[in-house]
Length: 150
Image (tube, rainbow, N blue to C red):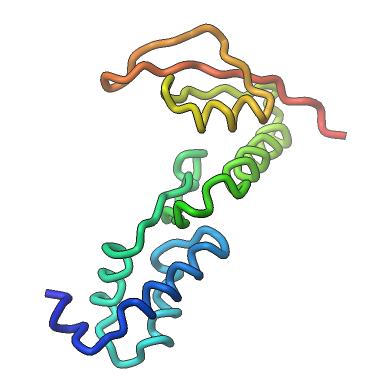
């Protein structure tokens, strides 16, 4: 159990440092290891990592796997939502798609996910009128043209 291996640890300090780390930019849990190793040398690193994952609220941002390449999932804090991370990711993906010769992009998102729909609409996507159910949830189709790169 991680509890006994963390006796005497200033957990509030650890969580505060980790929160600051994840708020700077999205990171993977692997990125966290060197920080906690330096912060608490000699401690059980798996116990420290467990403490981070279970006591610090984090949200996963889209990983590379969503976009056709693999990688570990990055995380940030909920406080960072609305900070432009999603928009920068979508912009980078659209640019990459255009450089690969695609002339349009399409996606599906949950019908009731207003936050995602605002993001996509703000990036030029429009609902195509197609809707369906996926795993019991209604989803809506979005599409947009990709302009020529000059």
